[in-house]
Length: 76
Image (cartoon, rainbow, N blue to C red; front, side, top):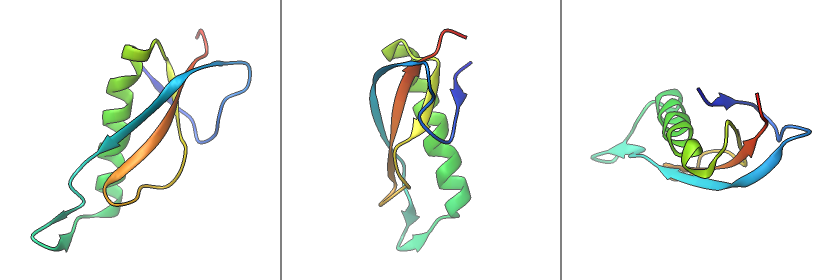
């Protein structure tokens, strides 16, 4: 279980960064922004264990259907 926090956690070691993409529009119609954000978070959580991380935090807002996350090892 990978934890999601809103800002970089204190007392954790950074394991790297992950950038994840999803389709943000279909046939020129924008998808629901909340749904896109949830899918981006889920993809980032799935990538975190590969970096040895147990916590992720967004490094910025989603843009163009992609978002970057910091991956952290907090030893929970």
